[in-house]
Image: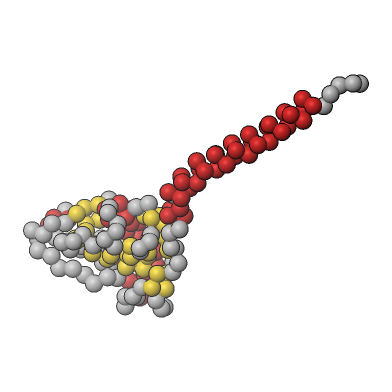
Length: 180
């Protein structure tokens, strides 16, 4: 009965400040790590304003098949909604921030048979010198992809899109010899 509570009071008086200091140290160690990765969470995924191509009824059906089955992510970039008038979502895809934009029904590109072309997952692509504008050469309905300079690996996006393009956009009767 005559036990003293003094040891319990001293232990509590020491443990509480030690726990508080440890908590502050752990918090301060974690904050810089969270700040380094905050840009991953802050990507803008708001709708992208796009130009809508004029499509025939047949081309519109093909483009709808493409956009309806497009991946939710391409080249590690998340899909974004598009806006720009009637038919925007049925013919245009956007990925990432800043947006990489793929347009089904893009203007066809005429290239020499000796031009450098790139075959990616069964689709033949031509690119401008800067590597920012890509267009399919071997599809009934051309697909154009505009890649912002910030995207250092446009081929990653093209590889992912090529899979669905090869599946949903019929091959053209003729293509440059480099596409064979």
